[in-house]
Amino acid sequence: MSTEAFRQLGTPTPGGIVCTADHASNHVPADIDLGIPDRLLQEHIALDIGTEAIAELLAREHGIPAHIAAVSRLVCDFNREETAPGLVPETSDGHPIPGNVGADREGRLDRFHRPYHTDLAEWLATSEPALILSLHSFTPHLASRDEPRPWQVGVLYNADDRAARIAIPLLEAEGLNVGDNLPYSGRDLNYTMNRHAETHSRPYLGIELRQDLTRTRADHTRWAALLAKIAQRVASALA
Image (cartoon, rainbow, N blue to C red; front, side, top):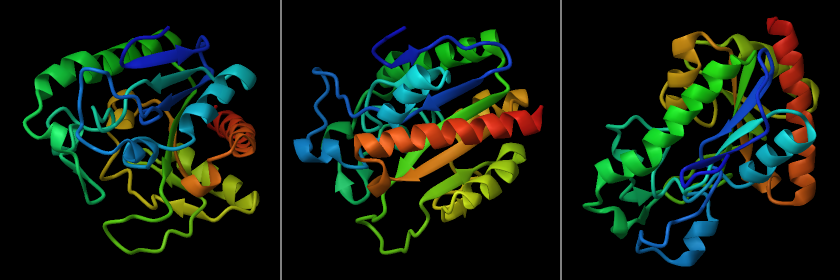
């Protein structure tokens, strides 16, 4: 299934694992002018680098269906509440987004945000998966502040840390430097999983991959295989 806001790969099965990728795309519709240089659409402010390819591999090679964003987070950020200022960002990591100043927020909500979440809700209600893998990636270097980001992968959660507590030691056993609610905390930024997982007591695993490790086809293949293995082990442990 494919729409302007999202696309879905694979068919969920009850008790299986599914993947969501809120920031997978850097696509900007032709009728929206963000007023930024094209080069910024290749940067982390426009998309979570690598997540689209990894989500596709999870669906096509590992039996983990995926609900994948089809529009840039600079157009509409699906991982924000409808009232959040950052839903249609006017700046991002120090870069002004002039085309979003005075933008029609309600129009973007109706066109992108609401369809994305309405269909995701129906998709999950139909399958009631054993685990949702929420896939994101993070830049190793922010332009707007200087802070070390040594973690290769972060595990994010809000109130429900059931999957996180299982996954963190499994990832560490793979030799990874794992951030526990780092570099971002799910207690501060977790809208999609708060709405579709925590509200329904569905277990979820929030993953952030560092973007210098998600750029090549080999990177994508490696992460897809590893995350599929970890997700399966987490789901089995939760059963």
